[in-house]
Image (cartoon, rainbow, N blue to C red; front, side, top):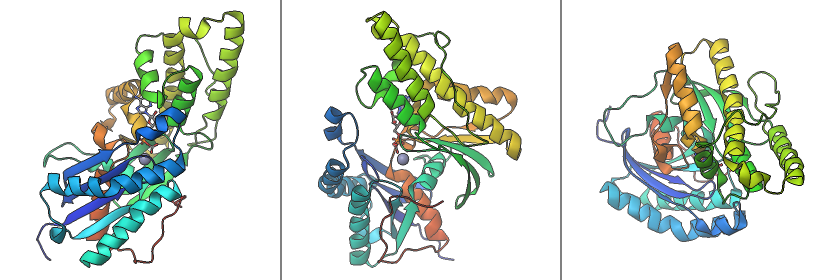
Length: 340
Ligand code: KG4
Ligand code: ZN
């Protein structure tokens, strides 16, 4: 077996973050992430603008990732890219770039399922030594587009146990934040305000969804009607109780997530859990999941840079596929929906 190090360039362009990363074996050498401010004034991601921004950012971002890693193009072993799920116009930019570069360097191409890569974010680090989950473990992936419960058997074998049937958890945070007049993306702002509010001041229905699936659209609607009703009685209601509303909504969302996580622990008997996705940044969720440690559950939460969309997780997942000899043909095309 060849023992020379494997250098992977990872490319991520599934939504509104253009990112490139370089790994040497399992170590992250660089992870450059360029956001897209252009969406802020629209209060949400505009797909057409996202594709254009990726087109502008991709080469400088890749360049910066290679420079920071101190790795030259001719050292690369393979290029890993996000094939899906995501916005098709955005995915096309990263996919086309990855294909062209792999072709010109005559190195293999590795396709990556963005959602499985989020799970692999738990193994991403710039340090050689850090604590990482042992297999099998359960991963709760919570982002702006997805809410999933996954049984992880090893780096390349994962089973979807349940997922949202409507809105994602991050979407619920963002939509409620929008109703409250908070700036986009509202999740972090709602989290900040919630910290000085009373989580039990108002109660909202948690909704019910069978087994390990999730639903957040009912909560969103009930918050909307609640705000309309209360503001009719008192036009200053939202402003007066802003922190309490935020805390109560956050409490409800976390309650839904934790109930399903606990159910999955009971059903599978797996006592190691990990978080993934941008909502892992939520202070209340982190605290609630950490509380599980008191019940002898082992808890892992990736560093923030590997929670939100980033190419570090793509490159690392690419490394494991590369090792397994799982390469993609140059005829490959991105997919907006990636079947599990
Ligand atoms: O994984 P991510 O960066 O992008 C994808 O959706 O793939 O997740 C972004 C989501 C947004 O909905 C954002 O509002 C939410 O994560 N988010 C938070 C917090 N930080 C980010 N939601 C609640 N509390 C936070 N602190
Ligand atoms: Zn994501």
